[in-house]
Each structure stands twice: as C-alpha cells, then as structure tokens.
Image 1 (tube, rainbow, N blue to C red):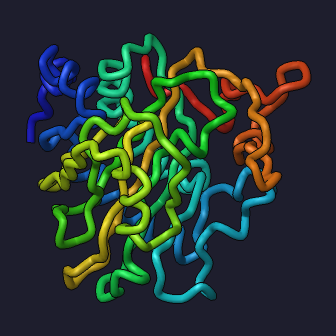
Image 2 (image 1 turned 180 degrees about the vertical axis):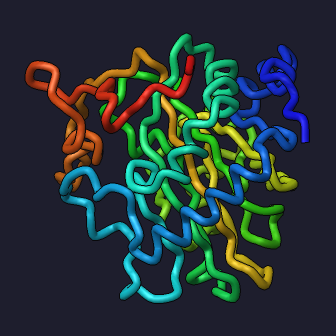
Length: 286
C-alpha cells in the first residue's frame, strides 16, 4: 500500500475552523494498518508484563494503573509508550504530531503523556461507562490552553463498541469539575446542562486507521462496550512546545492540583520542566 504524502493527510482550513468551533476533529484513515498491528502486539506484551523499560519513576498515583488483580474492568495505564516500543512508535507517528500542530497552531508539539485504554465487552453501564470530563481539569498546572488529545482505536469503532462521545462546542463553555471515573453520565450531564444551553453529543464512526482529536476543554465520555470484543485504544495527550508549569491552588477539599508529570520530569530551577525529553519527547517537527 502506498502511503499518501503527509500534507495530504492534514486538516484543511475549513476543518481547522470546525475544530476551533466544535472542539474536536475526526480524521479519515491516516494511520497505516501495520502500525496498529504492532500497537496491538505492544498492548498484549504490556499486559503480559513484557516491557522494554520500567515505569519511569514512582508517583502518588501508581495505584490508578490497572493491574491483573483488578479483574475484568476498564483498564487505564499511563506512560505505556515509555515502556513498550510498539506503543511508542504509534504515539510518535508523524501524522499525529503534524495534525496536532495544524489544529492547535503550535510550531512544536510534545507528548504530555499517553494512556493505554481497554474496555471489556459485556460490562453494564454501571461498570462500562467513562464519565463526562475534560482533560484540562486534570492539567491545571499547565500554562497552555491549547493542549489536545488524539484518541486512536486499534480497530473499527462506533458507539456500539463504547467509542468516545464529544459534546459539541463545550470547550467554549464555563465549566465545573466533572469526573472520568463517575459512571453516572446523566447526573454529570445535569451539571453542565443546567443553564439550558443545547447539549449536542457526537459519537464518531471510525474505520480502522482513523482517529479523533479533541481540545483539552472539550467535554467527552463514553458508554459501555456492547460489541463482542474489547475496545482497545490509546489516548495520546499532547502539549504545545511552549507549555510550562504554572502551578494551581488546591481544590476546595484540600486536594493538591498537581500532575503525575510533576513527579517524573526533571526540574528547571525549582519547578517541573515539561520539556524534559525523557518524559515529554517532541513529536513534531520530527
């Protein structure tokens, strides 16, 4: 198969304008099947404990990572691209960085971090939902308001398999704090629909090789996987090259607003350095 030139895979001016209006962008098939085949093998290796490098540190949030003892539940494992070469090859693929740069307007794009995601088939909504949330709410220490996420399923994906649903235009709203782990989607929706604004939910249909990008303030979540196979994907969180640590006050309950990266990256003086190439390598330009 001949790979189209990279420029032919980038969003048009009209698509960039739509991303800035709607808060998300859906690509056609832009990733080669062999890259996804390799990522599937990397996912299997990761879950089997066959890693090329250890987790790059110890942080207060290590218990959030899925482990076999957690059973057949939604799996979320951070920083897998720093541990398994096949996942690294996917997250660093030039088309992902180039599209992210085009959408965000950034001259340089760096990895923020990645999440390997696995949603088993057959879970009911109480266990199979991912709660409405924004990525920005977890990235309060960051200076940039133009961070974004590429979500890459390893197979054909739609609402039936529990694909990601976006709330159109929600990145432009005033927002409260939502929750990835709260499976009561209706209760969470009531929080952001309380002002009577229209809530338009979009679940893209993605042929294999396609992916989505969403703005860090776009509200998104997903329902249960009703297919016969597990939903397998990786979220590639990305930052413009000028993003830096700014700190944030604790939440009302006293919970610190730091990020796992703050404990992993090198220091620049007295603050975390989000340009640390070990944790946050550059993905564009290559």
